[in-house]
Image (cartoon, rainbow, N blue to C red; front, side, top):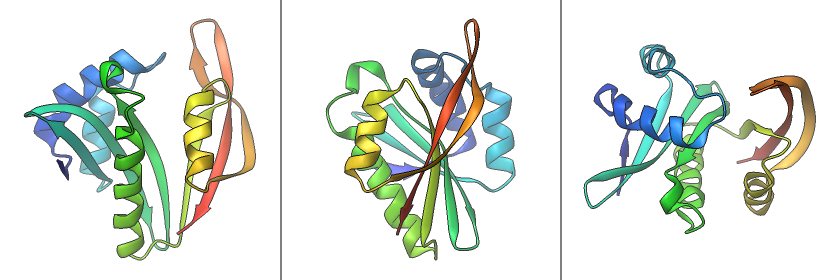
Length: 144
């Protein structure tokens, strides 16, 4: 079941973030995003939060800021469904273009985004922190 991301979801979202990211966002970053008016959804299964997405909508463009699925629920199509749900909602709210950044090394995510119609439009050098240094991000876009 998809539902809106609320501030009381932050502890569970942060737990997923820590399990899935080399350099996880802090709980404070999630609070700031919600306070700033960013839009998010979570996916619950049997009353357990298993995935989340956070999006910034500005005019007719949206930017996928963060998306993650608990490791034990990955590779089951849940991230795809959550992203499709978010993109449909963004389109219904007037967005006609979606953007995101993805780690160059995240081949599974890149493949998913390409399957959903995202195309490479650029890159950001040294965008993501990693254990020893920085990693480039690929910038992808999709018309809605």
